[in-house]
Amino acid sequence: MFWPAARFAPARYHYLMFTGLVEEIGKIEMLRGGGKGSESVRLAVKAPLVAQDAAIGDSIAINGCCLTVVKKTKSVLEFEAGSETLSRTNLGRLEKGSGVNLERSIKVGDRLGGHFVAGHIDGTGTLLRRRDEGEWSHLMIRANSRLLRQMASKGSIAVDGVSLTLVNVERDRFSVSLIPHTLANTTLGSLQIGGMVNLETDLLAKYVERQLETRKGEDAALLEIA
Image (cartoon, rainbow, N blue to C red; front, side, top):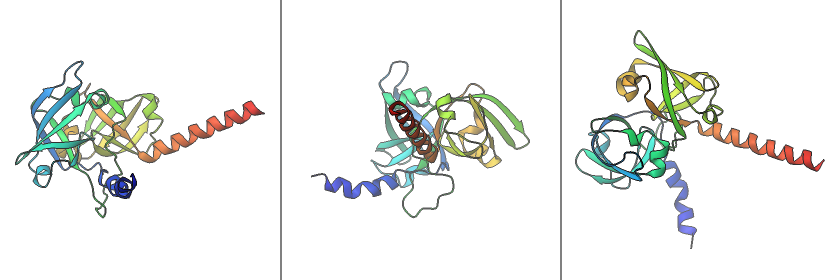
C-alpha cells in the first residue's frame, strides 16, 4: 500500500530544493494571526514575478523558509505558517508592507547558481555590525553556537534565503560580504543593526557533524566495553 508514495518520493525531493538566489522582493499585503503566543499566521505576499506561473500547492521560499501556496490571485500569493515555523524563523515578526525574499523551488535540470538550500530554517541570527565600504557591505551576525559548528570559512550559508559565502566564523558569530547586486535585489540591503535573519546551514555540514557525533558515540561505547 505504500509503493505509490515511494515511487514519487525522489521527484518530490528534488522539486523541493532551492538555490539561495532570490528572484524577487515580495511585499506583505496582509497578515492574519501572528503576535506573541500565536499558533499560526496567514500571510498574503504581492509577488508579480513569482506569481506568474505559481499554482496552489507549489512551494516558495519566503526569507528562506519553504511555505506552500494555499491561495492565488493575479499577483498575490497566500501562505500559512504554523507554530513551529513561527518559533524558528523571523516570519512572525513581519508586518504589512514588509519586504521578503522570494524564490521558487528548482526542478530537475535547472541550473544551480547558488548552493543546495532545503528551505528548512535551522535558527535565527541577529545583525551585530554592518560596515559599508563603497558599494559593498560587510555584515557580522550573531548566531547560536550549535549552528556555528556547522559553518566554516569559505563555506556556504543561507541568510534570509540568500546564498552567501562565509568570510570568518567565530565562537558566537560569523561574517559575510555582500556585493552590490545582492544589496540591491534582496532585503539584506536594508537590514539594520539588531535585525533578525533566518539561517540555514549547508546540508553537507549537517551530515558531517552527524557522522562525527555518531563516531564519537561509538568510540565512547568501545572504551566502556574495554
